[in-house]
Image 1 (cartoon, one colour):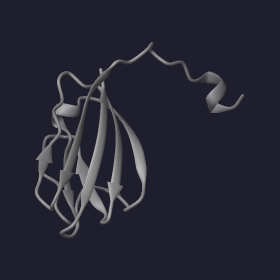
Image 2 (spheres, rainbow, N blue to C red; image 1 turned 90 degrees about the vertical axis):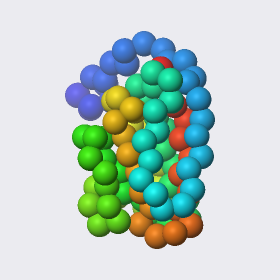
Image 3 (cartoon, rainbow, N blue to C red; image 1 turned 180 degrees about the vertical axis):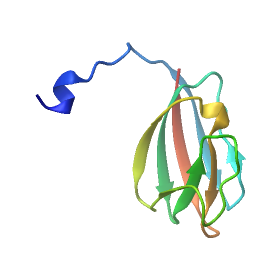
Image 4 (tube, rainbow, N blue to C red; image 1 turned 120 degrees about the horizontal axis):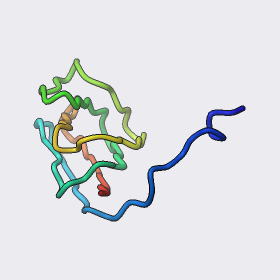
Length: 95
């Protein structure tokens, strides 16, 4: 049985907001009570952590420029940083 055949969603989600971050500073993305986020990295690679610690340009999960990911968890603890100046991050949040 394929993984997709066993996956069960926990219900519907409602929009909680949108944020666009630019530059290379560490940023928390708390948007309301968001528990899901669709994250898009543009222009530069970004690093992200969700354990409350600040990522650096060399530590944290790397998201390459042009990639997107779904994040499921407490968005209030999610922090991001651009690996180089000019990074742009687009975030759609859901609760």
